[in-house]
Amino acid sequence: MQRIKKGDKVRVISGKHVTKEGTVLLVNNKKGIAIIEGLNKVKIHRKPNAKQEKGGIQEKEAGIPLCKLALLAPKSPQGISKIKYVINKDGKKVRVAKKTNNPITGK
Image (cartoon, helix red, strand yellow):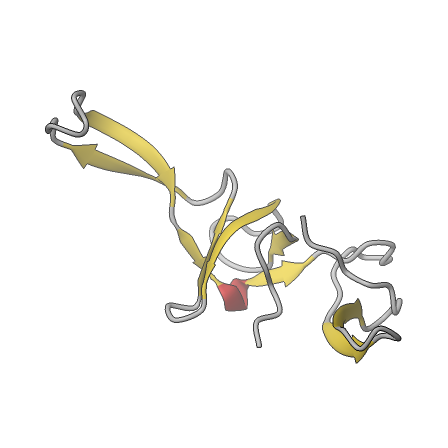
């Protein structure tokens, strides 16, 4: 089960963008990557075609491996927390920060 979901606030814990934070735009579990808003930008050279009239150099976010991301938990002293799952009174499975036992909400 994936622990990082779309809309979560995360921090990069290793690599070129260490200590930078952002919001998850997309998670791809098959490849094991997540796309973070404003981080790991790459330049793509595109030719003009029928769909895209204008060619040139464009920037977009590239994926960051999930193992290099840590979830930012609300009300946690350092901000980073591991995740556990708890079944609440309604019978739903909820993500909870291990240190503070506060529920983690996406978006």
